[in-house]
Amino acid sequence: MSFKSVVIAAAASLTLAGAALADMSAIMVHDSYARSSNKMAGAAFMAVMNSAAEDDRLIAVSSDIAKRTELHTHMETGDGVMKMMHVEEGFVIPAGETHMLKRGGDHVMFMGLNQELKQGDMISLTLTFEKAGDVVVEVPVDLERKPAEGGMDHSNHSN
Image 1 (tube, one colour):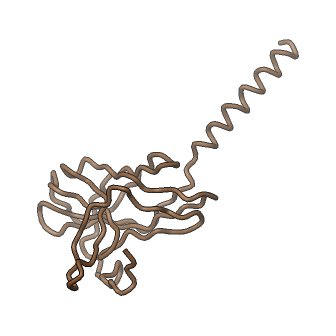
Image 2 (cartoon, rainbow, N blue to C red; image 1 turned 120 degrees about the horizontal axis):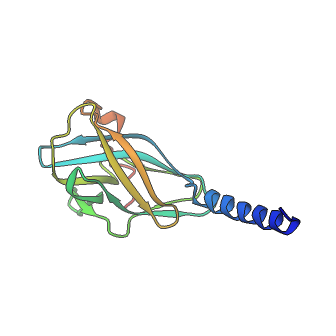
Image 3 (cartoon, rainbow, N blue to C red; image 1 turned 180 degrees about the vertical axis):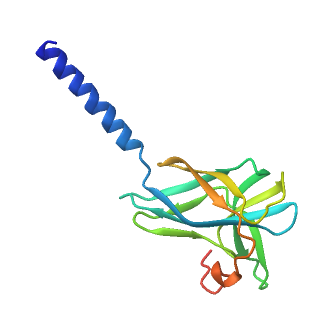
């Protein structure tokens, strides 16, 4: 092999390695779980951490567990009543921070469940980010998690 061939092969290897490293997601998901409120609807909750130097945005979510899977939040209607709403623009995940998807706040909503959610089942969920792209997570169904472990406290809700 000539010196020129070795240099070209080395450059190609470095280029491919750089592309592979660039594709590695700076998004990490912790403490995920899902539950159902009835046979037709459910939700998933988790901590989404962005270890990148730039903000990212969770813009979509998908799963084959339901007919529709959307990003939702709870907002006060002005009369003290909390209303659940689809958040089409998604959620900003600030650089170096964690955004909580939790009960009573931002969360993943499953509408028209295709099957009953049973304790211990695993749900495959694809989170789509503007910069990080698709991140697939396996979310356990935990029907026993207490509200204090995911909170229904609306006092600090800023939306």
